[in-house]
Image (cartoon, rainbow, N blue to C red):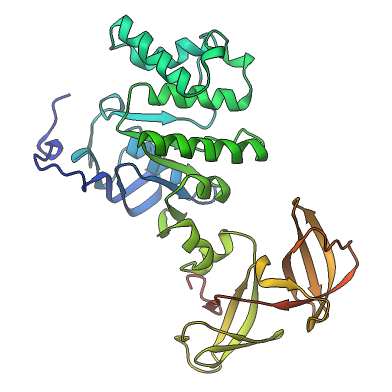
Length: 367
């Protein structure tokens, strides 16, 4: 296609410049607005994730970056070139973007070798075979090259889809819920394996997922989305330990909210006692708050001041996640070493050990 003026490439190049810039885009799905004035920046070699519940707009953003979905405002830039503007798009095949779909989208009638070669039709046959061989070797698929997709395990199919997307050496790799069809143990293994491989090759990647474990395994940065907007763009560590608002705190990790109120600039009163804050609180005395308690904030202590009863347990190997209910009727989640083994109905004693107090003003869902 002839590129209009808004698609002219910049002549200024620098390794420090972003590879991908999404600037204030909005998108509709059918007639409904699902993405609102969204911006993000991804630098070369970074792996980032868009994380959020179903219907938050994350897949629409990914499809817009790939060139499958139009934008209503803003612009999308890849490698200093504008590829999406209002009313005009560079087609997907001209963006040098690789795509891994949720269902892998392998060609069932083609072998592994043929699937990987499918995106290399522009290469001479000799170069094509060499590129496919290198990619199969890198992915540990050489011994499966002549098998068909239905003869492979879920993890092997995942590797084939990734190999096919990476074979043309894209500038940017996009992945849409790539591990969702795998069981939990395999998806954790594959997430770390894919992350290591992408870092080794210096591949820039954007993944969308509803699963925080997938996002944390892969993402250097994670953007938590809600109702078409990114509500926090941060490292996995900060999202867990320093959530920017009530939605992020509730969505990331396990936890419960405990009511309380400010009693001093660095203390909060709760039904389970006074909790210190490591940073000065911004609210005045007696302001009602909600305090986030993670399972690791609730510590088993045979002499602890809080008595509770086990109402649910989930064995996790080295640890057991307990749901507890105190004498006051307060629900708590607690992660104990598995040798501290309790059954449903048992009474236990615990204490709170909160290293960093995460608090939000009561009835303020945005925190």
